[in-house]
Amino acid sequence: MRDALVQFIADSFIASAERDGFNGTPASLLLEAVQDEQALRDALGDIVGSGQITAVFSSQAENMHIKRFPDRPVVEQLQMLKTEPLAGTCLYPTADVVKSRTDVSLWQDRPFTQDLLLAAPQLGYRAFELGVLERYVNDPRYVIHFADYMGRMSIGEEAHADNHHPDRDKIYLKSFGLGFAPDRRPFVVAFLRYLATLTPQHQQYWNSYTADGDIRMSEPYFRSSIEGNFWSNRSIRNAIVEEMRLIRELSKAIWGSSLFRDLPVGDVPIDLTSFLRPTRENFNRFVMALDKMLSDSIDVRFFEGKVALERETERRDGKVVVSRKGTLTLLEEWLGTEVSWWDPQAFREVVIEPLREVRRLRQKPAHGFSKDTYSSEFDEKRKKLLWAVFNSLSNIRATFSRHSDAVAVQIPAWLDGDGIDVF
Image (cartoon, rainbow, N blue to C red; front, side, top):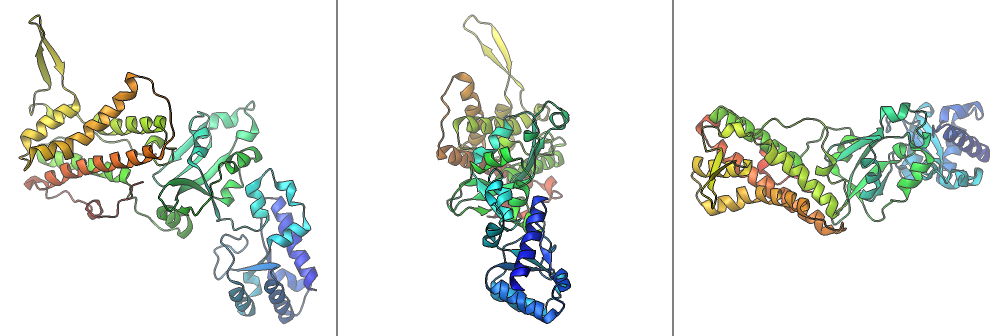
């Protein structure tokens, strides 16, 4: 009887896997073959104890018909088999049982689907080197949505509708996230259930970027994807955006107009995320995006009537050349006259210099050619620059918030805490 039960459970699971279902067998179905409920429970207990099947229970799983998480300890499964309703119990073969009953090599062109065939949990995840995404980022046929900790991607509507476009490339990855090694190096992580939906060619491509080592899912991605809980975005990039929003509100409350224009809402540009490899080219892309977000968002109209918008320079021939001042020059001049800084030199170093450094770094690639190189130093430079920019804006915001006309603007406590994620 026990062999027959294992055969039935394994055959049902394999047949479901061939339909991309990977569903377990409800224990109540087995009562048709074993009409004595206690005898069935005893037999299932023996099979679970022998390592041939595992059990998922509706009292502990949102959907017992798919194995979302790793198996419970065998001792716990055996105890629950004695008391849980058979209609609330679903059974799955173990990897060894599947291997003994089907040719798993037929699935080797789909490595992540093969993992599910071998009864891996659907919300098990795999980690990948950051380079895995660049193929899609650089291909205009794909649409990729990025947030700070996660993203999703798919083939674009036009390419999907094009019959001349290869079906192998018409893919959709519902979700991917950010993971970290113990030394805080970033990686891409994705759940097996989503990876298994990729075509064989793209599964093999992703598999070639598989990363080794103890790579853990970032906490915000875990909370939203596994626990289904709300999470607070406390990334350094989002903190910079929040500081700019507050400076905009504070300047409007105090001087009647906003220092910064409204920032566009929606997806985060990939150049400002941690999903790119640490190369010189990607660092330059990051700097350009950061500078556009910062100095390009300064509204020149704010300075009208506050400081001179133009400068006059006398040439050697005596003629006077009139030129417009840059936004960072206007900001420095206005802050230097509007605010009585305790230490003017510290003001320039802490508040102005980081913004000018971003501008200098942006202009550097435009004045020459440089060989693209890969180095973890670019990742450290990126994080250091982000923190310096945040510190600059935080000082401006803190100074504005002490103004008597700024009392109505509420400052989120997390911006002045130590919980900001710098990655």
